[in-house]
Image (cartoon, rainbow, N blue to C red):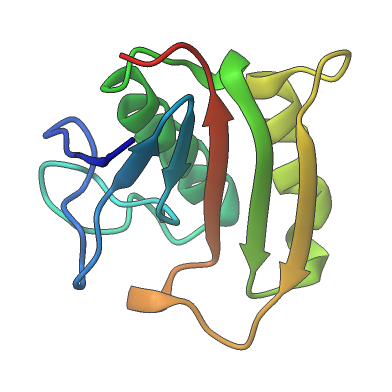
Length: 130
């Protein structure tokens, strides 16, 4: 089984030496996504809500490039610059991924994120090989 690098123009280009995602068998491992506009490469806003929505849009675009969706997410990790933003991020996350069949998840506060972002989210998804 070989790994397959995933790349889509519907999500921001990597800001370093990494892939947007890698597929290995039935699993897809995404890179962390910030709230970057895929066209401009700039943060979509200065608030955690806007950045969270865009990060999830970016992750969804990467998953779609593999034939999967947010419904296929098995595990996610959320990195926050300020844990006081947890409830805001949690509410947006619940809107997009649901509650009843939510994936496993971790959330943690970090000192800084690339480009001055307030939130970064990464995911592991599973589904049929595409």
